Length: 174
Image 1 (cartoon, one colour):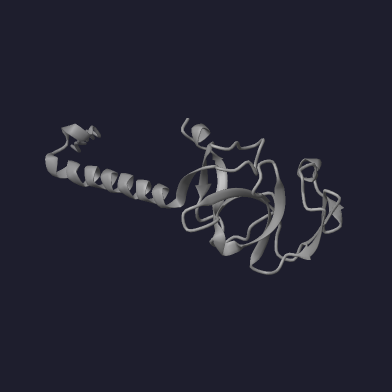
Image 2 (cartoon, helix red, strand yellow):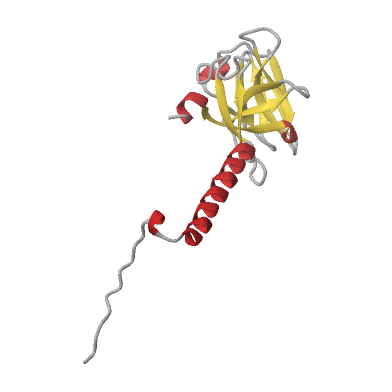
């Protein structure tokens, strides 16, 4: 006669011997620590101190940026970014043009490669006339100037970009 043994597998973590529990707990703890470190070094929270991105983001609002967005990727038009103005000061801006683009600003209307940009950008108080091409290693941003509600075009080295804004801090906490 052939007898079959019935195997009973108990997957309850606490019913297993103590020596089997420790590797599982250690692996879970290590996973949690590595996840927190990755999140801490990949995402950074900033408080916007300028009005350059209104009405999407307001002055004083906290946003989360992805620090490694431009490590292997090139910046794209309409990216909302945080950049460093000095060693301790950061500002937000919108990328209007990337390397190789041609910008023309005439009578408060911005033309990108011969086509007018959105009315929302053109309605702001801009320089009366400007014409230039964006060189390699730079982006053209629409940034706040010294006076509130006054925006202007600026060339910014890509190396000064701190990260791409991925959303407001409050929404990402939910």
